Image (cartoon, rainbow, N blue to C red):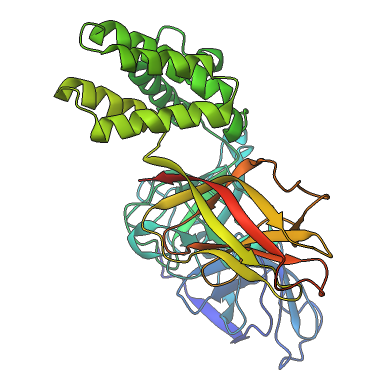
Length: 441
């Protein structure tokens, strides 16, 4: 068969970018006669080397309209060529076979209608993706719907055939796979996005995790949320509730079980202390004090090693190292500025402040006001500016914080006071009769 010659009858540079799905290009430098290029072949060569071919349906003075929409974007600056084939055979090769005969080695790309309905997008990457195959980049995606959750399949290049779930929005022109492709997806790589979402692998992984959790915490035979709550307790409860009555009741049960194993070794004083804790469960301040006494026993007592270890476990069960009270002798009130009644700017363990009690003396013109600040002077209690006597607390009565004030080691704290009346001063005093402290560590 005689050689077929394809002639370039015109060429130029695309002036404006064209998104996937468009079918019009323009070149402001041209002045063509209408439809002078109708039915000729238009070949586009992007700067990255990717190529597109179409049949011209119509041309204006400086525009070319092809019959079929472009399957990938065209960038401004791309070269274009208008080809006049000497016969229809070469035209078909250019359009359908990329310039070569259709055969087993160069098959005609078709989609079964059933399969085609699953393809949401076909494109070609416009830049190299992230290292290790962590993304692919296609600028045309910015003009499409969000394909988060669908499947991206590489259809050319070194990793052709690799599918990955899309994990994140594609509206910025980037596809992020749920796990990396086999390597960097370079510019000019073709791919498709299928309208399929899969979850079996994720569900299987989650099921395995839940089963492992149930095995660790017991009763894996009932792997339901209800059984987890029954074993671990309801996380919807407040932290205060968990360390309050419910936490104390759980501790008492543990104490009872522990006491059964060590009954022969416990002296009567220790047995009485355990009974006291159970009796005081409805009084948070008192049962914490009872536990503090046990912690002291663990350190100073004369019991044998097993008993001391048990006492240490009991104290540790509530995260308690020391429970005590700070007190400060009376100081003159100042009616204008905050005064440090207690300065603990330097502490060596994580501390919780649980409550306080103050006493005043002298001819106060105003009411005492208190607050707690960190070592740098930043207020950490209360939520409002200050606590005022007769409004927020009563002098001489124990105040118990609903939520302990937590003080990191690096911050420290100061207990400050002043009067509501600037006339107060020498002779009007305030004493800190107790500041409830729990030191954890």
